[in-house]
Image (cartoon, rainbow, N blue to C red; front, side):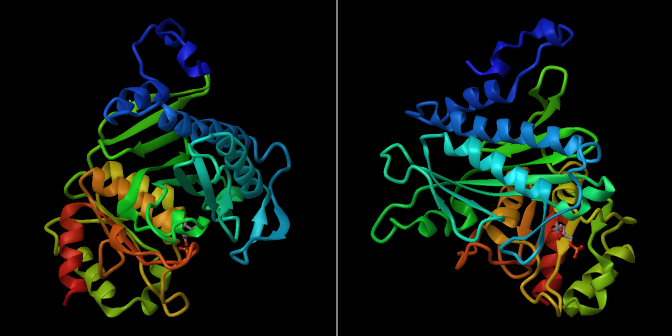
Length: 343
Ligand code: P6P
């Protein structure tokens, strides 16, 4: 029995509550023949993210800030918290018998875990600490994850084939945002649910059941410093939104941490865009472990996500770290964007 299940309502002010483990077990019942391995897999993510948040919360105190000095596969200087977060997810998930392959933003190639085990049927792809460049200035950062079932058929025995699947094949996905509180948001295809970590008891408690993205919001979120290098349809769209073309006024909000910018969009509505630019014609964000989990959550909450031309979840990946433009948000803003992108 995990520690979360040992917590009784009395230990949290007597209010009835549901931990993420209890919620997953309840959700598990929807999967015929599920043997609890899926909830055991997800508990590896919740454990790792609790360890990560404890370190993120103390970053300024334990002199962990500053660069590790190593350079990761993205050519970016690794922050020590990146390395720690990657190690925690790797450690916690490698213990899960049902996982055969792990792929991370921090590792050039996917890691084969229990590939030979007949029980190994899932691949987990993750960005251990998205937005880590914001750590030194105390801005929210996040972990994103995507869970795929192993592919079947000929030529699907190499680790890459486990992860190079379109986002529509995800069996579950989500993120953890380390902000003013630590919130886990996930979906296994039956609604989007949010859990807030109660540090007093060390459990993620259900705080946002069945999240629905508002049909329209009041925020648009894009790095306007790159405006001059956006494709023209993006510029025309942003001008349309700003000039009241969607029937209301908008404010601009841009945190520069995708998980935080998306979490606001999920709860408040609106639109988040990371368009292609001259410097990054394929966009900056990574398809497999940034855009896909976000798009999965957005769609299951009633929103939409495209790469400017097609549904993100339909994109067939060619490489693990491939980038994609990302436009994600509420129905009204996304339907209007599609008019401009098809224009
Ligand atoms: P820019 C953080 O480094 C990140 O990968 C995403 O979390 C964020 O949305 C984006 O980059 C911000 O990039 O170019 O606007 O600073």
